[in-house]
Structure formats: structure tokens, C-alpha cells
Image (cartoon, rainbow, N blue to C red; front, side, top):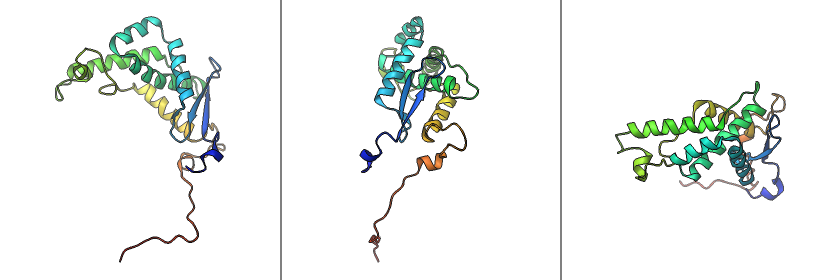
Length: 184
């Protein structure tokens, strides 16, 4: 923590959308999440890729903040899937969010043990994050692979990779005059 200024720039990984838009998305290697700039870029890219009709449907179900929060997850997984994954595959962000909204609505209507789902919690019929929202499995798998990609420093080949254990380890040195305090 104290040598952050010395290491600035070494803990950030860029995810480049090399097969579609050539945009760069910056991720923090320690948090395994996008930086503020990366988050904004992912949300803007998701808005550009989602069909306006789908956005109108989603805005009837969720508030804008929920759509933004989920779209960055789905967009990051989509960029990873089409630019880094081998073989590349396509994830439609709009369809992922529609599936998520459908499953959320289904869970809300069937949840009885807690008095209802997120719709009952708000009382307005609109869903609220994170009461009953879960990402679909295809995005969940891509997100897990993306986190591994970020943790290992964006290394694709086995020889380049630090390994998840090494990337996630913490280095610290005890002072030479250190002695643990014990009670007898």
C-alpha cells in the first residue's frame, strides 16, 4: 500500500477490443474490476451496442443505475469473449440483459418466503439491484475467465502467465529486529 506511487501503472491491465471497435478498457489488477475510466467506457460501449428498443424495454423494468451496473458486466464479458477468448465467441449484451430481466421477474413473482422479491421491496413494480438479479451462465463463465486474465496480467500464453497464485500474492518483509509479542 505504501509504495503505490512507485508501482503506479504496473497494476493496471488493458482489455483491447481488437476484433470490433479497437477501444481500450482499463482494469485494476488488484481489484479485478474496471477503473472509473474503464467502467465509463464499457457502459458507453454497451449503450452503443444495445438496440434502442431493448433499452426502452429494460428502462420499464429497471432504473437507469441498474441498467448501467449490469451493462458494464455484460459488455466486459462480451469484449473478452470476442477479442481474447480462444476460440472467440459472441455475446449479445442486449439479449443478456433481457434474459436477466426475465429471470428476475420470474423469481420475483414466485418468491413467497420473504414477502416477495425486489418488486415488493420497492412497491412500484420496478426491479431493484441486487435483490433478485443474477447474470446468465454464459456471461458468468466469461466474467470468471476475464478476472483470471486480469489477475495474471493479461498473459495469454502459458510461459507469459504469472499464474493466479503469484499474481494474487502479497509481498511483505519483516524488519530484521522484528520479534512477535507473546503473552505467557
